[in-house]
Image (spheres, rainbow, N blue to C red):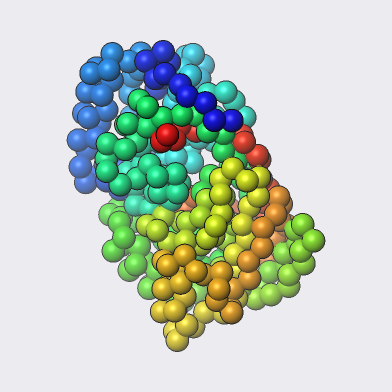
Length: 300
């Protein structure tokens, strides 16, 4: 579904995360949002998150209050928490990306000039996008097991984030991480391999223009599987170059596939990430697509 909408006719709720990457360094976006509401005479208010998972509670409350649009102002974690409450509803979801990665925001061209997401709210349209789930945990950009889940776990414990912090965290994890063995089944797919990373993308990137699933689209009813089999000190520079250049699928050490669902089995229970948020799950992870299950505000 692609349809225009009139922000001025919708009761709206903005959910602001003060600890998201940009907001923690410069909280002025909160004042800008309140000015935006006043300037355009909107039937809207702002809630500020106070703890992990609070955005989901606030989004549910906004729906109960009769809001027809809920806007997340934060990073991928805030996006995940807020949108989780809106999947399979008719409530529109808006995003003002201001985190450390902003994967979905970049994919949907909502990131860059800070005026872009506000302009999309005023002049954009509603686009029905796919969402994914991993053992019932929703994700909107990407999920993963292996090294990237380990990095996400360490990164989420930092008090100061950003690209430089992410690089430092990745380098520290690199020297201690050991690949796991996976058995993966899907649509006419059977893979048995040791892997450094197993990622499933709904959008094409993790964030920061790091493309883990080049060519992935959020409205094609498919998920994109990327398996990095072997990584060592010699291959890292080329893999990084390919990932940031959008050509990771051309690497001989990478397996790519797409499908509606995947069953990923590993030796034991452990962590996964969904939009860089860490979840504890069992040894078997069921990943599936939910077509056109989120009504998203995007630029025209």
